Length: 298
Image (cartoon, rainbow, N blue to C red):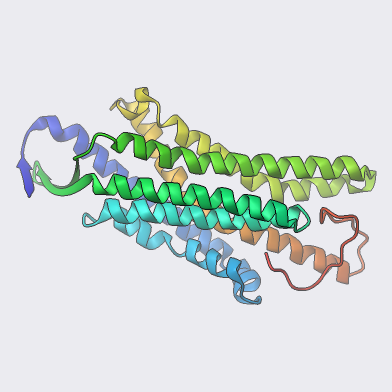
């Protein structure tokens, strides 16, 4: 069914939909720029290394941006496609976080099983809620003042609850991952207590802690969008906040996610190069002794 109307009351929604499309295009341009900027490192640290599960996840997350934003701009099956891609991409990013935390916790099987169980429970729950949400929403094409738009009609009463659950669970996971990262880093430096490693702290903070801090910051931004004062308002401030959340969420998935892998592989390669050159360095492997190899499974 196609809705055709020239009612001026729809003009604010037309402006919102148009601005949202501009935001998605801007996010796509930023992703392309980041891809061009990091392509050399990607070839060296991903394509040129032995393939693993993390490699496949990295490539899937990195190159899922085009269909995700394409579905967001096109009218057909947009809500279904973007909803499920949001769940899948965030679950893949969660796997990359688990690999990082597994290495940081000295390859502890207990922490590995614990994290897998949590992420699996979150992913299944979000999948179930996404299915319920998409089943309660029907898409319609609208022609508002001569402009084609996609419109969604809600047939169920629990759509807002399911959307809130999906939005809340992944940020909760990312904040929890940040807590575990900070905990093991602080614990390690307290046990080490070597003045000579002071300059190493900054590098490891940038590689291990900083990505999780940015993830958590974006997650808090997303949680703020659930406020009724923002979600139900068409004021300029609320709209700007919504656009900010939209572009931050896209960049979180398709820029920060891949950098979880590139950052630690780049740092590992630097440590190997310094070791081969005979530089006297102290590394943090979250164990007392480390043997630097030329291969990396992260």
